[in-house]
Image (cartoon, rainbow, N blue to C red; front, side, top):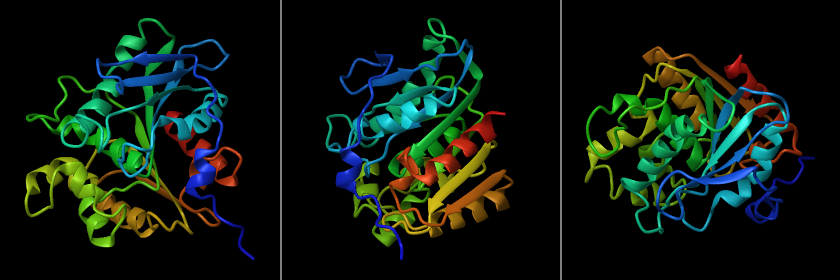
Amino acid sequence: MQSPLIDTDALLELPNPPADARIPYGEDSLQFGDLRLPETDGPHPVVVVIHGGCWRSQYDIGHIGSFSDALTRTGVATWTIEYRRVGNPGGGWPGTFQDVGSGLDYLRVLAGDYPLDLARVVVVGHSAGGHLALWLAARAKLANGPLSGKNPLPVRGVVSLAGVDDLRRALTDGVCGDMAARLVGGAPEEFPERYAQTSPIELLPFGVSLHLINGARDPIVPEAFGQSFRSAAERAGDSVQRTVVPDAGHFELIVPTTPAFETVKNAVWGLLQ
């Protein structure tokens, strides 16, 4: 008999342990990050954590705090980014993307005050946050336009947890309803150039190591997403690992008390070695 899956209500009831510091990376009230540091001496490798929630404004950073705290306890610094989402003023195109880019690059500023090893930075994102984590790894390819960063901080790799890695497919398959279109500002036939700049599968190859983790019982982002993306990434020449956690759904991947968390922890450290 299969165990019941963790649902949204249970996820939102998880504790959100306080960060060592909540630090703004921009002027908007949603442009901030939670920094957590391990108790050991640095410089510490850094895991940038990006929460999901279908890019919707009602799902904020709070539900992933216990995940970031648990990762920190394994010996890494975590920088958990909040960002403007669809429904927030300035969210969607291009603000959501600009925010996560600015949040990542702000590590250069943080490294002036905290013992962070910027040569060992991995991005971990869940669901819609997995989409943004993968996008960050490819951002350096966007040389011009509103999404290009002036000097994007290089990352060593990405761990995508049930990531929405194909925005066109998300619309076709009804993942998060029509939120992918609302994020980008319209349908693919209206803004093909925006999808080309924001859908990870259209930005391959990334040139960094990738680890895709999916739950075999995920009812929100089916594991077929990860499989299709892995095939496309390998054809493009990227190094990709993929793990399917047998008895996990969508949220088990970010709940520290589940067996799936051990898989995630090992994936993160595998990219940091």
